[in-house]
Length: 262
Image (cartoon, rainbow, N blue to C red):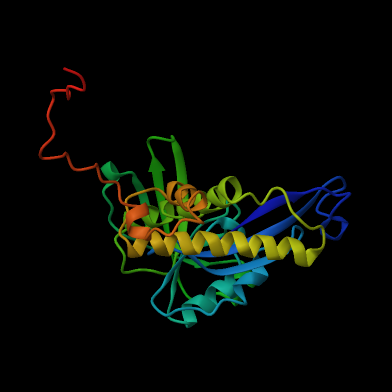
């Protein structure tokens, strides 16, 4: 779960004012990593906060929700736990908690600690009265330390940072949407026109992703989109368009040229 901003011109889109000199809309998206397909999308003004979107989610029991630290709200996280689902998110530096139990770890894997904790702040503890799991991990490549919070106690400790790393897929989705589906230039200036164009862009992405999965194509999504864009008026099956096959050599082909004149 994450959100991204799409910048707009203030003079053309005054209804979406974000800062003193700019406008923007915010795209709140829940991406299903099993198929890289958005399952929930909400479009709001740029000033809207990310947290209220969690109240609109229909939580799936057994699912694992990956979120950034901006979604830290213990009352809403407790709702995920009550629904039988799990979450993994970055912990804020200001988190105040007491260690209840330390689990054994292998420090050669990058793990630094695996603790069962309880929240100590009054409002945090009132919002989430159960214990949480705090995993600290050091990334030798980036030379950075990360602290994660989760309610999934049965997962191996090293799986927690590995799961959070998969959150990068939604950043790639946002980048793909902005770069390849041309939603920086809008055909209308009203709120309805902007939202309609964004929804069309998302629908195109989903359709291309479905085509890629059903045909088991190894082509990138952008390549498939380009092929389809230049073949809209051709009566050619998709399997033929997206299959890269070399022409079969002619069995009677000869290297000798024909003699036209005696």
